[in-house]
Amino acid sequence: MLNKFDAIKYFCSAAETLNFRETANRFAVSPSVITRVINELEETLGEPLFKRSTRHISLTDFGEQFLPNAKQLWQDSEKLFRPKQKRNDMAGIVRITVPSFRHNDEVLTDLLTALEPYPELLIDWREGMEKADQVREKIDIGLRIGLEPDPNFIVRKIAEVGDLLVASRTLVAQLGEPTDLADFEQRYPFAVPINVATGRAWDLILNETDRLQPRKMAFMASDPYSHLQAVRLGKAAGLISEFLAKPYLQSGEWVQLLPQIPIEKWQLYLYRPYQQTTPARVRQVFELLEEILKKHWT
Figure 1 (cartoon, rainbow, N blue to C red):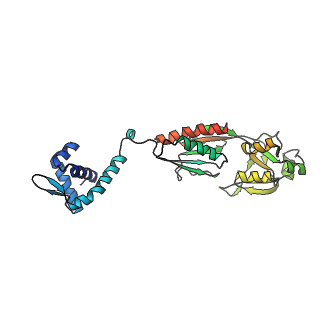
Figure 2: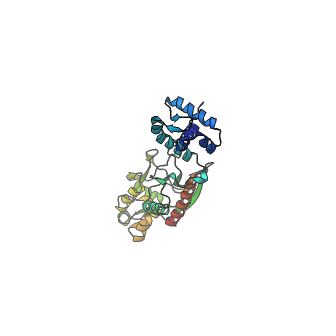
Figure 3: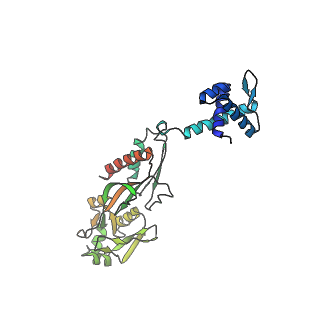
């Protein structure tokens, strides 16, 4: 059976040298092998590639037309099977999924700046609060908030992220500060976070003993920045991430409610799947992103 890859490279070399013996020397085979393979290729194509005489060979018109495509195929196959050390380790795609955070623009700017020396590297950057399907979406690197990292991932802890129970100073002035959790649940309108995976409200567990069960739902959204706006405008109180709430607490626009109740912190962590072989580009982007995220979060 004709080995088409060998046939293509033998043909391309013979078209360059116009000498089957020289072509045979290049590939350390006998001239009869070159002759046999070229003959089989011509039979497969149904056209002669070379005009032969006892003294020399030359390409036929069909051979001239066939040569550019053959050269391209040979070059592509050589590139495909090139040894790893001869390839550009920083060429290819890296898919990254991150939650929708406002300072993602700064993080992405730092990452792309650091990767400027690698023009053949393609970053596929995906933002969203829903959990990505690691396999179906072919995610290489992810950033996630959770109580416990997935043991199936290589994980780098970035920071601890806590929630605060907050309301605008205007709303607190209208209703008065709650005396305890039950009082808050009874009197305060609340911005309820929605789990996009189920379409239902999240179960608001504050700690091992306390669960938040507001009676007055005044606003519902899956996006934490929408909750922020509802709280900022005095529409409702909310359970807001500390890093989002901090500027408003510092400016005096917001008040932290029931600070005596401990709220369990979550982990913000960078991860990549365990794989038998991980491309160098994924490892390097992972390390760069870890450094950049820690700078922005700490």
